[in-house]
Length: 373
Image 1 (spheres, rainbow, N blue to C red):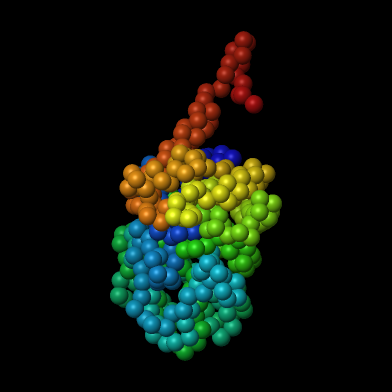
Image 2: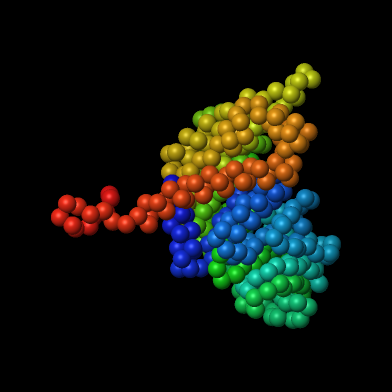
């Protein structure tokens, strides 16, 4: 199920491909960037550092961070839309979050090691002008006015660490979705987590716009990491969640038909009932529904809870100082442990792929060569 992704990884090792993109959507486990940051480091050490790829602009919500890129903005008039409730018009770009303003001289910046920049924004009727600065110097101005559509600003630069800043020039609406900062070769691991999010939130994002931005990123692999919050949501049954998750997989298949998809099942979670911490029973329903939908849609599935040790294992992780006292989230060391386990499992499958991909052709009894079917 990950063969197309493994093929691109193999070509990356041969220097035959350009930057290889991985898009990771998820909840607070993703937003913290401890799990995804460790996966990013492991993959880039082995296959090359392609830069940060896509990241959200500014500080769209409290606690957002990326370890591979620094960003922010001191201007007071940026407003966030989307987030876990998808409040707004659904035009939330690639990651389900936008920041917008109608004020002049509002600023947002990003610092990244890259040689290429792209700004994702909303082209809209009456949209304001924006100035792009590179390392404190004016680089260019551009319009966001036009028919309603996804907008892209591309900018080539020299390899190295740069600070880019956007400044609004008019009292007119401007909506930003994020930055792309990358290099010519290597792997990007682009974490787009939203605290408190459930997988169904992605179905509230405008499908055409999401497809446009996913197509623009041309991912080799899409990772979905939801389920923790759904386990505490009594509305979900096995059938309803499986149907919803299948709809999400269908939508991603339409947007990226050649990308591999990896679903990470939710980790173990405990809940306090009558003074005792006990496993959250509905988690089994979510895991089963994700597994069934993944199998039907030819997506890889990694059972996080099983790799932790199974039902109730969060208690052991807590006592080992790998889990937090809420018995939901992990410590930094815990996220790194999970990431290393997942990475090792991926590499094990990749090595198996390489065994067959690079195997010499067999010879028949007449000395002619033939390939295994």
